[in-house]
Length: 357
Image 1 (tube, rainbow, N blue to C red):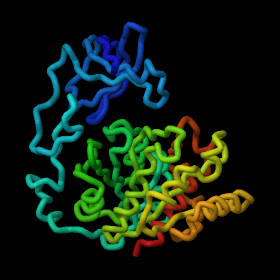
Image 2: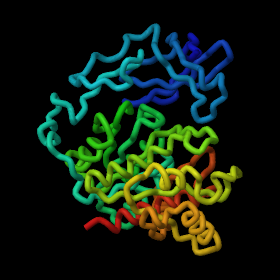
Image 3: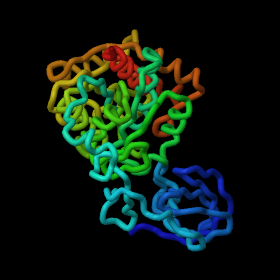
């Protein structure tokens, strides 16, 4: 059962349209708690709030934060909006959105019969953190390109949970966001990833898209039980819509777990099993013995037979991130500690940039 605790707000740390961070006193001492203003309403010091502390009590790391469900002393959430598409349906937290593909949307007629993205390059990542490298890889080669981020509902549902997305938007490396499925809070809301890709091209007028779940990938130490396997069907969706599907590899040489050393088994399993259509797999140019190791891993998994493997230099994207003062991290490791993870994403972005006319 989830743990719900009544706490009192002692400090408002940060507040914006899509997230509020506060310090609250709980039975177990002071903790940090996060809320979503569109669901929570206003929040002030001294307010009594109900907080879900399950992640903290399970010591979950990234997921280990308190989440504010309700303000007992506040005015409540804002009135329902004009949309009728429900996200997080049939849960106590279901919320309405104005989905651009819904009949009440001004964009409905434009999207009604659209079923192609006409060759648009789409980078699909298996980790949220790699979105930074992918968009930087595109922008480094094509600064004028307009880039959209399509967030799936494989992990975090509120896009407001992603500090990375906020930083990428503020630095103008990312131009527009879209949340699909039960994910919510994007500048465009859609029912699924197919309509999301079409909406970003037709309504967002983007040149390229990066697709990934939000923060919070899950793994189980089994061959199939990991969130990132969604990368396979996502690549297939791009191909079905006549786009250019580009796979970003999860690579690390510092992860001590053997299944994640070099190319993670998550990438290898996804490309060998879950991606049923041929796509482009991008390997970063490393220029040392690590390159041969990566090639051997791809060859052993049969990736060269199933997909088109290309090598790209991802260095320019990383330099662009540095010039913007952006220092993404993944699972507690900084870009300096695991550069291969981000250079891999940047290389995939460079490949997408090469497809732009």
